[in-house]
Image 1 (cartoon, rainbow, N blue to C red):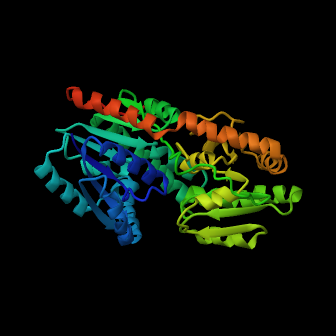
Image 2 (cartoon, rainbow, N blue to C red; image 1 turned 120 degrees about the vertical axis):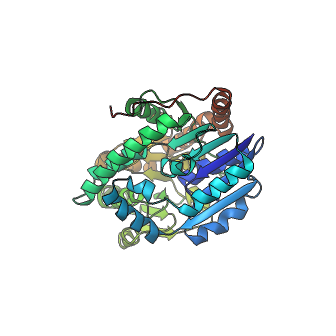
Image 3 (cartoon, rainbow, N blue to C red; image 1 turned 90 degrees about the horizontal axis):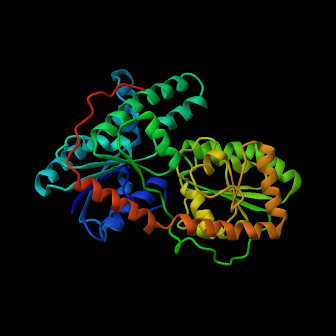
Length: 406
């Protein structure tokens, strides 16, 4: 089968949420199908990642888009009435490239990952199109609105409304939708009723991320992620302000490593706090995870699966997580993850893990066992194959005549 795969970023290396999912799907699909990848790049430097896809894709077309261009397009969309996050990525060069390749290659299926790039597949209703939402981004903008001040509060609330209308349009005009978690599936069925949707979960590379037996640094905690992404910035700032002082009152030598690329100014400022270090970009997060005793995931704005949590669990690292970060997993509370939202309870879990070697070791074993049982990529990709088989075998369904809000 000839497949066009459209995504937001060059899906290599698999070092952030969307890239992890898209890379593993492309790698799997390329074993039996001919896959052409179309994407935008995070600036020109992202194009240097293309060679990493050569073993998996027949062709890769990536068009760089700058942060300045994204902001200008979003500003214009604010007045024009379009969803800001969709208009911001409306890159004419990529539209043209996909149309040229479509005329030449005549794909059997188009898969899109992330709703804000669905626009690049809208011109091809004659072939089956699968929309992998991952999660509903409109609900993310609702979270942003709830935690922002005017005027951003108004802008984010407006984007939630506009993007939900667009998500409904895509849900009803594409052949099938995919989401990563049961919670997202329930949200989808509630907000976009009548549109077909299936669950294809995320996985974790259990060979790459695994316990290595390294010596732990006593009292050490770690957080990983892209550190200019607002939910991650909010998480570590809140943790350092509200939770870390409570932990250090009990364990003065306790420390936090914030490990991830592009740390914002707010993140870099946290190094002024006792025991806090910020690494910036690192070639491999595993040595940092291996030396820590506890992983913290204090995300207050989170949707879907948190790959950082899965990777930590796979490393046999006990995790203390917010309800938002934990709810995207199927790992029960207490089985490798301790869950809390309130600062003193969050800190109490950490203190117990740092002090109680036996409990920490038990939680570490449960952490690894939990991802082994639930997050093998081959299981998730079998679910993807099943949906593809159904979608490509089924007759084209009629587009819903009514897209009224519910």
